[in-house]
Amino acid sequence: MSAGAGQPSKRPRDENFPVASLVLSPQHRDAVLAFYDFARMADDIADAPDLAAAEKLMRLDALERALVSGDRAFPQAARLHAIDKQHKTGLIQARDLLRAFRQDVVKARYNDWAELIDYCRFSANPVGRFLLILHGERDSAQGPADALCTALQILNHLQDCGEDREQMGRIYIPIRWMLAAGSETAFFDPLHTAIRRDVFDAMLDRVDSLIDQAQSLPEHLQNKRLRAQSIATIVLARRLSQRLRHTDPILARVQVTKADACMAFLRGLRATIQKPPPRDSHVTAAVVRRSGSSFRLGMQSLGPERRRAIHAVYAFCRVVDDIADGAAPASEKRVFLREWRRELDRLHRAPGTPIGRELARSSTLFKLPLEECHALLDGMETDSAERVRLADDYELGLYGRRVAGSVGALSIRIFGAPSAHDFALHLGRTLQLVNILRDVDEDASCERVYVPLSRLAQLGLRDAPAATLVADPRFARVCESLADEARSGFEVADAALMHLDRRALKPAILMMENYRRVLDRLQARGWGKREGRLRLSTADRLHLITRAMRPA
Image (tube, rainbow, N blue to C red; front, top):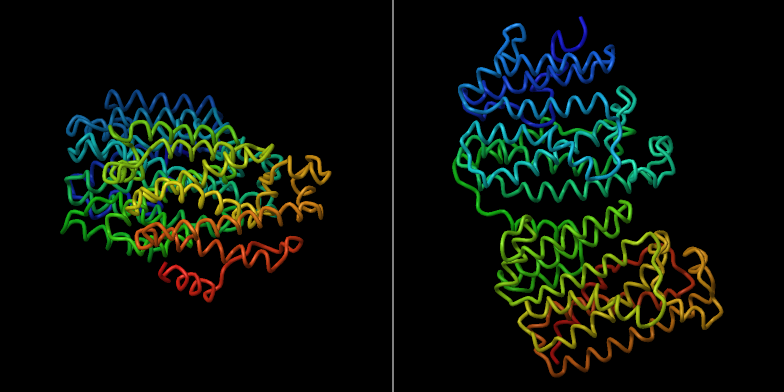
């Protein structure tokens, strides 16, 4: 018997994420199983290896007619038809799924991220919407539910990318993202792990942002059992994302374990006892923890409200920086950055992300100049280009003002030292010079050179591929001059601090001492010896704490 007419290829227990789990009430569980069985039957038709495309489409059409009419010749369709009559949900969502299954029959590649997200609107989001209506939930839950369903779908695409290509000829990784490997064949070559890793991580950055948006879902849900299942699902999604970051799914099967599932459901069951608090601040704090930034030490020195606000600013900086540094095509990066511009524009009306909501809260409390956030995005657009060169010192200053000065201008208001605006801008430029010196080779691997071309030209160096430029001995001489400027910048900052509130500026001072120590290490190593990225030792960090704590 051909696929679609016999036993389903999967059962609910075979799925990565909970389907009709025992957490749900029996009444709701039966309805969910009816929806699942119908979707599984349609999926098996679309995936059947022994059916031609025309036959698949004919069977899916017949299944839809049976769903609408309640034809008992198709038990799964008739059962879901009855569920829809009883609960006023199921039919519309199932028809959306059928649209996605038809697309699977005729479309095997996705050009960009927008196409993939559009597919998820029909292949994944209807499942969440069915559950919300079934449980009588509020419309406010729909946005985070859609984000969660989309994240789950893309995680499954990444998890099964090798099998999907080999068995069904489908690839859900955007074509333009794969071109970094040169071709589809090269991308799936088992030996090309490093190239794949960059693309997978860039996609997982997008997925993690979706999971962050979904983090608020439990607080929108009134049904305790559904709330418990949603928490468990979010926990498992994060776990699978973490595993995919550390394992190549082309080389080995990546999945969550039974232990992961048990832990997730224990966390979910706690929600049946007590409604969880708002999660937005947890999201921004988690971004800070994951970053491993040396700035964390300075953040911890702040009081709760100021720390929550700086977490929001840092999380915004981190996520847009990840966009600029990721493996997505430059045109896609610009799209993602424009989404953040729109989020900033609606910040005091209806921000759609947890970082946006936390940023709005911080802006109100500490009168943050949001034009600085736009300035940062301007800098990220520079970084997002396929090839980065700065023509002269003016462009270097403008770039530093945007990517570092903006952060300083926001931070000092949170620290409670708005009068230190000039100090913040000057220090930001100094820290950015150290960043440029530290990351010369890492930037060159992305075809970025931030040392102004005008300075290189003074030594007879013309523009060339980044690797060629940074390998030239004359490039090291320019690095020496930038290091001297950074050293002078720290001296100017020291002098300014004599007239400022050091206690309020303690986080900035910790950051300054961290970067001063990095510059010391870079100069001690020499500009012609750049072997890997320089990292500070524990002793270095103790030293910077001591310097930051000393009185004026």
